[in-house]
Structures are given as C-alpha cells and as structure tokens.
Image (cartoon, one colour):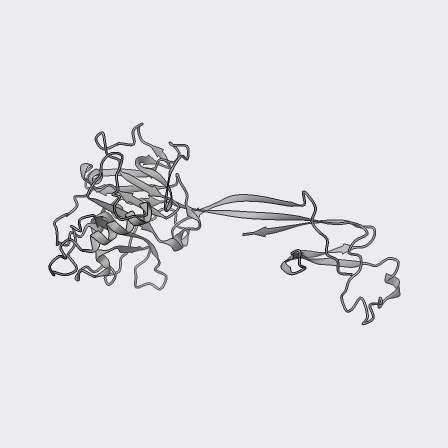
Amino acid sequence: MATINRYGEGDIVMSTDKVVTSTWSDNTNNLQTFHTSAIQSTTTDPNSQGNFFINAYHEATSSVNAEVQFSVGYGHKQGSGSKDFTSDTGSFGFSATKVVYNQYRQLVYGDETQNFTFSTHTPEDIYVINVNRARYRHNLKPGSLNLKLTKGGVTRQFTDDSVTSTGSAVITNIGRQFNLVSGSSGVMLGANVNQIGISSSYGFVYPDAGLIIFNPDALEADNLITSAKLPNTNGANSEKLLTVMEAGDQFIVDSEERITSQYYFTRVKNFEFNYSSNPSFIDDQGSLNFTSMIDMPKVYISTVGLYNDEGDLLAVAKISQPIAKDFTKEALIRVKLDY
C-alpha cells in the first residue's frame, strides 16, 4: 500500500553547475549590426526618450522578431550635452544627461553625491551600455566580453580584467565591479589598469547588472569619441557611442546561469512497495482483487512523490519507464530537482 519513507543521511545531495550561453537573440555570438527605432531614439523634445537612452535591436524594428539587445546612454553630472527640461528660473542644468548620471551613480553607489572615479581621475560624464535584462540569465559571464570601438583608423578592443585579476572584484550595490581594460577575453593588455596616461582607466564592468560604464575622457584621449558638452545643447553623444560600436564590428559577451540541483536517491528495498492502492489492485474493503497476488504480488513503480514533514505532496517525479517490483527486486531511483 502507499507508504511514505524518510530520506536518510547521504540520500540527498546538492550540486551547483554553471551554464553558459550566448547573450544575444537567435543564439548570435557576435552582435555586429545594430538597428534603432526612429520613434524611440528621437531627441526633438528635451523629454524625448532618445535623450535618455537609445535602444539597439538585432533586426529592423519593422520586423515582428525585433528585440532590444542593449541600450546606450550618456550622462553628465552638470547636465551638459542635452537641452534643459524647461527655461524657467533655477532650471539650468536640469536635463536628461543629469538624470542619467544621477541614476547610475545611485544604482552603483547608493547615493547622488558620489561621482564616478576611474583610478584617480574623475570626469564630468559617463557613457553607459546597458545589456537588456531579457538577454541574459543570472549575469554576464566575466571574461567573455570582447567589444571593439572603431573610428577612422583607430580601433580599440575592450574586455573586463576578471582573468587578469583572478576573479577579484570590488563589490558594489549592483554586484561585482571589474575594470574595463584594453585586451580580450578577460585578459588585460599590459600590466597597468591606468592605460590612458598615469591616472585614468577606461571604465568599469558590472556583470551582475549587465552594465558597462565608460570613462569619456579615456575614449577622447584615444580619438574614438569627442563628447559634446555644451550646456543646454543636444550633443547627440549616445549616437556617437553607437556609431563607434557598430564600426567596431564586434560585441561578444556571454550569459551565465547558475543551476542548483538537488538529488534524492530513493532506495526501494525488497520488502517495500510491493502492493498498490490502485483500484484495479484492491476492492472497496482493501482486499486484493486477485488472490494470486497474496503471496507473490507484482506491481510497477511509475511515480515518486516528495512530501514535507506534514505529509503534503510538494513535487512529483515521473519515471520514464515503469519499474517492475516484487519481493525479489530492489530499486534505486535518482530524483533530480532543479531550481
């Protein structure tokens, strides 16, 4: 008849595995072509969405299959590089770029007073690449970033320094922070994070939040981008970042997922589970329908149920093929629960 057995010591084993897949839609490894929406990226009004960020799609937005892959944005702590929201007295500098800068420092540092400092250099502004949350599982895989920016005859390849730093990272409000460096696949080119002058790095990578933050002064020193920083003026800086990204023809980054599995080794002894409560096996009085089953019953195990201490059924595992069971047979069934 139906019986509930408690798992013993050593019957339950837990393991965690990492599964790595491509981040981009259609399992694309290298995202080389970007498409934007003329409606979303418009900057005609100070409050237009395109002043805050521009979405990049893997297909033309006219396609029903078009999905946002990432967004780019530009932030300035004084609000330069975009039009002020209003011309009222006291509204100077209150613009989209100021909102973007404040948003990201609030995310990373937890307040609106701490500025982004790259090594010992504190620029007035930042560029941001924000990978769409739907594109990755738990996080972006450290060491998988390979991003090229190109302008004219200048090309620079960027990655995080997770391999060079052997995984050591600064922990922020949004998770791990690695340095954005010149190099490939997590390995920094050279031995100094300050790859522009003696005091400035290229930026930061936040794999747990899908963020890449650039130091604009470093990009300008490399002649990749010249940011327009005039107050109350639309500088179209987000488009500049998108342009050098597309010219670079390489944006590779993988998605990483941690899957925790719990294994229940269900041991069925020869004297257990030899009878069934199936209506075809017993009558309303609990007696066997077939007397031949009294001394040598034969049943089939098709399901394993997992119960809590109160006897509530929590999960059911279906066996791919029923297992014959009688007093001469034992079984070991491994139940795997992923979460």
